[in-house]
Length: 279
Image (cartoon, rainbow, N blue to C red):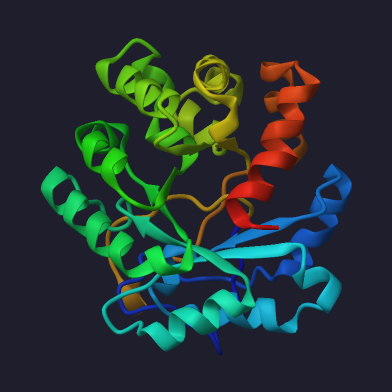
């Protein structure tokens, strides 16, 4: 899930494609309690770029007990030095996000180069790289992913789309990559997978295929507060943030209904994230 601070203090990066509105962890906490979720992973949103100030401030301001149940995924750039990485690690950061959707990167060569460069910088910390990209890009760099010396996590079912179905060469390539254990996949964003189909249950066939491929490399998340993907003007002229009207309990029920195996649910919701995020 994502957090946003007061815009007056955390306005966003010059390249932001939407204007952040305040969405603190305190607003998410009641939702988590309602769902029975005791742990959280804060993921740096694209609007802040590599300025992880609010993400890190949220970790700093959490109580000791609360912080022990929180981890984070930051964004780094060329100016993020080793000292900064160490400080983030001490606060609970366990991965870095490579967002190839905002702004969109369609070049497989560019994506592979960014991935290799990022992996080289975080390997000593034991972090993973979280990639948000189109499934087509993931499929074309599958061999690069498999050769990396760090874990790779693919966001939102690796960018799969319900309208394309589960028999495309790209999705089959993803299943092969997952089966080999060379990648992790987040079973998040069912409504994003459904896309033009307003019913998130359109994502169920994808969930079932991913679970069948390798339940030991799957995690789940709410993706709160469900940002709409923006494109167009950047910076001060970017539009206000918009949000998808998603009920988190519906997403959790959808996962449990698609899996229907308590041992596998335990693995996806408890055991796997404990391993991946070092809880």
